[in-house]
Image (cartoon, rainbow, N blue to C red):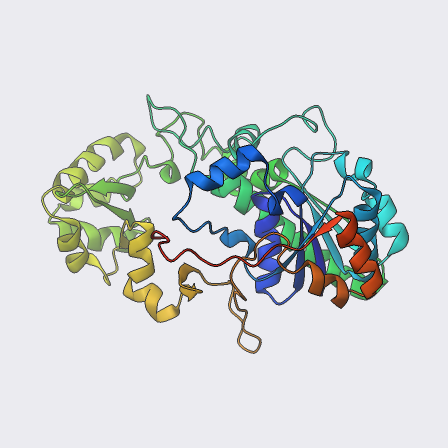
Length: 397
């Protein structure tokens, strides 16, 4: 599968990374200013001297640099579209059309193309043309308000929900679905992946629970929002934390037995009125030992216990090491591709490429004649990035 990715940030690159991890040939079309930064951007680069700039979301694919504000750059992309299976773009609604790279132009040239659009609010609706970021999409989808405890504001889980779970992952899934359908019909189509839609989709379970009367909008009253003692996070004596997810009766029974707590808490498991006292009891016990001591005591037992690890610790945990959940590419530790395949394993490909690093070779590979390539480079419509050596004094990553 050949994919053209119009360079953007966050969810679009993540979706394209997934496609590249799964074996697609993805070419990232970068802006000229990404190759030759402005004076302001150059100052920023100078301030980062001695540090490697690593955008792992761009791993596993090649990069060309084209001026999409110039007709020649647009035509070069359209020539790539002629040979592509998928195009990925993450502009605000209407921008691709103004550039001459909208779905009508692309699908007219290549009716088999899957045209994948990544936006926050979608292609239509009152918010469609409004700027925003992960926190805004999560809020509008109704997924931010539940992420709070009584008396505290909502706490977004980084930008995992909007940009990646409800964004890039949704985009990749939509592309794969459209490719499966194309195998039957022979036709491509537009995939409209909006983060508000994706985050809303992630809340499906909770809408069902609300309909059953099992979910309250009052913070700190639901099992999955850390109201229950058996599904919570507890601080240890050294200021670290453990996670407990003993929702089932038998797991909670073993947890309480190992913590030296009585059967009364077990009998009260289904009574939300008793949960605050139960949490207080577990909090007091967990504060008596360090994280390492609790891990030695509870890891591997039927208590649904795990230590709360830092990202660095997660890369070294024995379980993740054995499963190769993290891999090292070009000296950088990073998450391995997922899911896993028994016959055709996925791989992370190569390290992130510099913008415009492969302009010459990609355009030649995609059918451009040498004269056409030379003309694009001579006119400045295309740029070939110079080879950059990694600084010998590069700091830690």
